[in-house]
Amino acid sequence: MGGEAPEQRRLDRAMSFGGGCGVPEEALHLVLGYVEDSRDREAASLVCRRWHHIDALTRKHVTVPFCYAVSPARLLARFPRLQSLAVKGKPRAAMYGLIPDDWGAYARPWVTELAAPLECLKAFHLRRMVVTDDDLAALVRSRGHMLQELKLDKCSDFSTDALRLVARSCRSLRTLFLEECAIADKGTEWLHDLAVKNHVLVALNFHMTELTVLPADLELLAKKCKSLISLKISDCDLSDLIVFFRMATSLQEFAGGAFIEQGVLNKYGNVKFPSRLCSLGLTYMGTNEMPIIFPFSEILKKLDLQYTFLTTEDHCQLIAKCPNLLVLAVRNVIGDRGLGVVADTCKKLQRLRVERGDDDPGLQEEQGGVSQVGLTAVAVGCRELEYIAAYVSDITNGALESIGTFCKNLCDFRLVLLDREERITELPLDHGVRALLRGCTKLRRFALYLRPGGLSDVGLGYIGQYSGTIQYMLLGNVGESDDGLIRFALGCVKLLKLELRSCCFSERALAFAILQMPSLRYIWVQGYKASQTGRDLMLMARPFWNIEFTPPSPENAYRITEDGEPCVDSQAQILAYYSLVGKRLDCPQSVVPLYPA
Image (cartoon, rainbow, N blue to C red; front, side, top):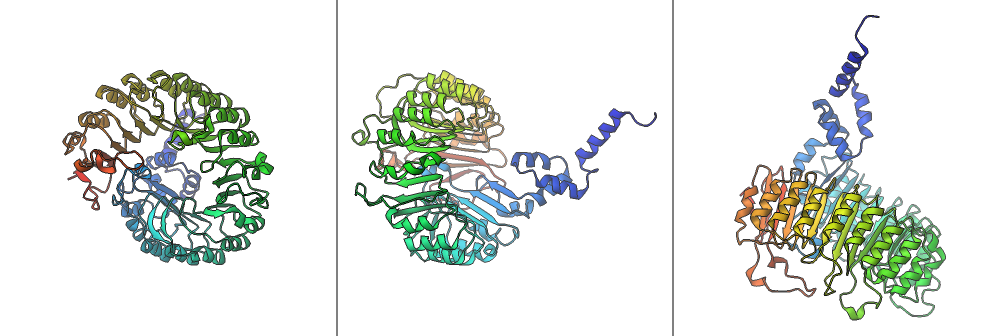
């Protein structure tokens, strides 16, 4: 009937949409406003300049994965209307005492350069960073009137004076997160002021800190903040929280309360938890105190038993009463028998963490310790698992194959093989690792810390070959030679972040391997065949790629800490990362910036 062919009209419309020319400005703003995934956002911003500009104006949240990768000024220019910002600082190894305290990752530039100009900022999250009282004061001056979420995760160098200022000034604060922060305790007034000034608080977390808490302040908080859903505190005797629990009628999550006097009859008999509580983590709980959980165990969705004194048998009895658990965190004293109960009972379980227990065998439960038996049982019985992190005493290829066969939703897998047993049933684990990676196609994070001989060069090559969509890896004591590392690197086309510990690789091989991983943005290495100067690392020098070398300290080469680990500076470290900033200016004397020099 004349006119253009239907195929041509469709092509024209597609080209018009692709270039953004035929789509009204308001429509693009609305559409991109619903796109939250950072990868989808990045792809959209590459369509054309117009889409790039609209992405900049509509982006609500950004996570800076490493604080030296970009400058605050550049971030502000790219995303001037951010509502939420998260910045990560020191390498993850800082959580295990492997990074010096004066290493860097200072929050000051991120606060002073962004707090005032980011006029829409409502949420601020810092992780493993040095935060001072002055930094928090500057944040409060600029954003205190509209700040709704402040998360300081494993940060240090601030005090309760700054928290008191936050409590008095940030009256719209809904979330205050301080877990595992090193905070100077100058009094409890901050918590009292928070209860008096804030009536909209939803979540408060100062778990695993040394802060003093007064029960009267918690009672006032429950009275004033009817919206309080989650509370995680430092050590406070549960018998002093009876009134608080009675008043906190909306509370759904609680952690940190302690049984200071275990075994005292009737000490905790009057403790009654709120009826809506479905997430619980108690400290110093023993066999005699365990029945306090029984009345509401069936409605529990999250249970943290890492800081309890429960035996293997106690774990079995308690978990058998918790059929609706989605999240479980324990120590390896749970044993294979306890994991068998988990497999039989917790069919909905999505996250399982088995932490390392006491290293003294005399203090371990006779039936404690997790092996291939417990992991296999969990893999078969808990098929909804998305996250597994476990310290094991023994392992086999078959157990890893079971995980690959049955745990199809697994996104995050972390395994540490302890060195308690002289003999491991089956090494190397090449075929088990291959089966796990081939079966768990949704994996995004993968950590494997073994013992010498735990994974051959062939197995290391399998990790590269079947890395799929994995974006983060931690590998320790893997491989036999440089050849295995190169095989691994050639397969890791999508890996963004890599950490290596206690490996046999040379500097030259590490530099060459890094050049083979096109998506790699960050690598940290400790424990390899290092030189005193790091000279071979310059083989990977290229624009925007920062290389920092921490040489081994000769005087500490044979020193061992109280935990049995080598001193922080007894082994050389490499940190290399993409950066739009160039050489950082706050390196401590222990760190040598190789490139840019």
